[in-house]
Image (tube, rainbow, N blue to C red):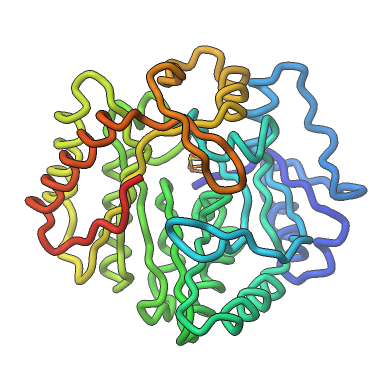
Length: 336
Ligand code: SF4
């Protein structure tokens, strides 16, 4: 379980019950530095070295109040993001948050969960159809869940909502507090998976695939609709054998589930993310040769480098064929 090195409290976090409880909890936890900030600006986590500063930020939890209650849209997996947490303790070199969170990705946990869920209610009422919220668009919220119980609260809330669904994805395994929550099948729990090589090389600080599948089995036992994200998919020498081993391992270890979905995302990067990655992980061997990629215009105006059409088609054929063969009842929600 993740234990922060330091926990910093924004002044107005004490206006909320969760803020007070977290202060009590971490003040009594051995080896955790606890500080009250003078404003919402994080100070006192200094380092002249960019890599060290990044790693320190990933060990720093900031207990904060979510000021903006305007939710971002979230294609292709949902209608809106549900901002409960931002950033996470993982050190994935390719992390999609490199574009938005930059070089100091402090783990911010928001204590005004009631206000956030009230805002979700407003969005639900605006739409005729079912509204889907994504809880992991700006974070991996599971790593801090044992402290905040925010997912638990959100899952319970969505369990009572006829016109909304909730979903999030994780590379962590802290599922125990979520096993007996009245989810009412309205929350889809997804685990992110990748080949052993990708996890070892690029997903430092996260759980290995065996542990993630074990946690997935607990979640399916608890009756949640479940899915797997295979992401990011990298094409390297031997990628087909490695992804095949992953699919076979999943087939052999996963207990039977009533509903199963896959989301498939090929590797992509923005120029801003690439610049950050090269500064934060100067030794990285992430494949980011622009000449091997195709430019694509993405959400929020970012231009992304994605695999070229021929490579993308190889991925499509490979995964569609093999998922259909090994998991005939599963649905592939999208491949991008
Ligand atoms: S677990 Fe997800 S959010 Fe956390 S560093 Fe890895 S990719 Fe980024």
